[in-house]
Amino acid sequence: MAQEMIEGINPTRMELLKLKDREKLAVKGHSLLKEKRNALIMEFFNILERVKGSREGVEATLQEAYKDLSDAQMVMGDLAVKKSAMSVKESVNVEIESRSVMGVVVPLIESEIGQKNMVQRGYGFLETSVKLDEAASKFEESIKLIIELAEIEKTIMLLAIEIESTKRRVNALEHIIIPKLENTVKYIEMRLEEMERENFVRLKMIKKTMEME
Image 1 (cartoon, rainbow, N blue to C red):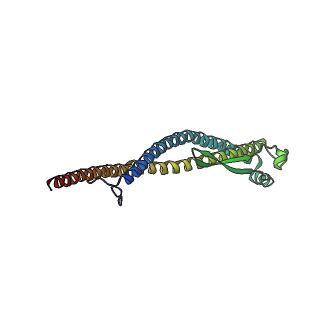
Image 2: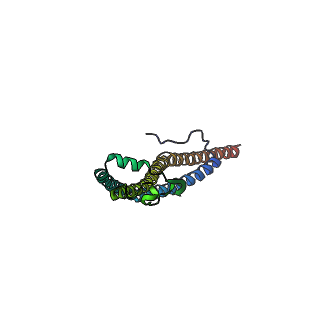
Image 3: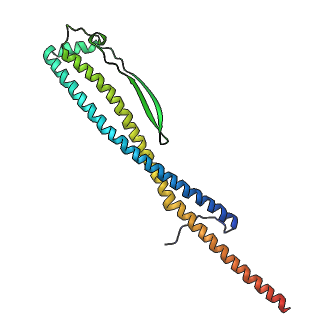
């Protein structure tokens, strides 16, 4: 199989110098991209560990919240629980900003979900069971954990996309661009050597012809 080269390049010393500069830049870029890829992969797996813990935290808290809610329904009845739920005011403030992880812009979510008492939630002590209050408290905690999980999972997704993009660029440099540059440099060097030999022979013949005259 013939070695691939860059097309449309004239075998001149000027082009040879330009190609050698491009080759140096490509090799340096390849090295930097490999470092970035490896760092991104390490960061990806570090955050992946957090995802597992965060999901388990959400599941455990929601499980406890639904158990307390079920207990409250048994004590109070479905209608009373629904009536109490309707009186609760929504109070979740979320701000989404961004930060950089290895050059990748990822979300930074700030949420304000404070723990409330019965009065702050909008229902009275005499009308409800303590289990309803415990369920509400755990659901509030779950919302905060879910928001944190959303931030982590979005970060994981964006890092995965960047890792794949960086891997493609590394492979393109390693298997296509750098080999083409190297092959083209070798070809031009070989052609320049051939041209020098041809010129040397031509000059020798001219000199010999002049000496015979």
